[in-house]
Image (tube, rainbow, N blue to C red; front, side):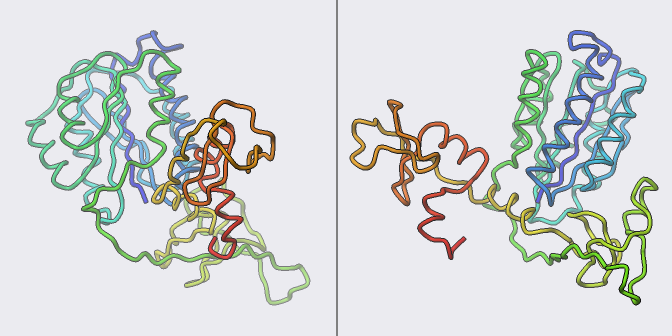
Amino acid sequence: MRHLYVVVDASRTMEDQDLKPNRLTCTLKLLEQFVDEYFVQNPISQLGVIVTKNKRAEKLTELAGNPRKHTAALKKAVDTNCLGEPSLYNSLSLAMQTLKHMPGHTSREVLIIFSSLTTCDPANMYELIKCLKAIKIRVSVIGLSAEVRVCTVLTRETGGTYHVILDESHFKELLMYHVSPPPASSSSECSLIRMGFPQHTIASLSDQDFKPSFSMAHLDSSSEPGLSLGGYFCPQCRAKYSELPVECKVCGLTLVSAPHLARSYHHLFPLDAFKEMLLEEHRGERYCQGCQKELKEQNVYTCTVCQNVFCVECDLFIHESLHCCPGCIHNHPTGV
């Protein structure tokens, strides 16, 4: 489980037009794609957005697991006036106030999109870096202008990464790098988490005892559907929700579906790389276990567990999308 704050620099340098139509619009457009992909890969995690300009920092969205809420806020932020200088200190202090209360078994992260070459801070930045390191907040920076010394120290001390973009495609590539969770440290806490797995139920119109009701999500947004007969009902308090994953507003139970948990699971236990070998050295059958086509490439890839052989396209698909070996699943169907 991840808790990530994205800090967006909205200083006057974001009006520069080296990215089209300008840095701010390009950044917000790419962040919308990032938010969608983040919640696909990390469905039971949370994300928040902070904007810094004119020496101040303010939350655009609180930490939450609803991608539509963040996307809507980013769309509105396109009209933001870019003013003054950013403040790294104020932005990180604001993020730290929330992240320091997050459970120890989750990752606490901050991703800064930094356009300016200066930062206006009210106190010693290096003392704040020590505090961030002490409470294990990992800070990464994507620079839009040039490398800045304080950002180099910040990312090095907290275990994050620092990159400066070359162009818009490189910017998107660097953003998507942060979609996958960082490797967990050996000092991370372990704890059991209570979760509920509600099934979607729809009452028939002939059921006299069942009445239409509102979803709890309707409390936050008037755009949510109104009265309905179906939904996901919390197994602990029976509160109704229109979609998963969500944290129950009544009893606090995390409600998820099995596929959500599976998408988070494969990051904890990634599939080992297959062993590359020349086709000439392979003594078994000359067809790919994945696509069942004849092996014609010079190199083939062997699973170190089940010893099945795959072509390069299937190897990429297995490691980037499937995250489990088809040969191992076929050999041990009951263990999956």
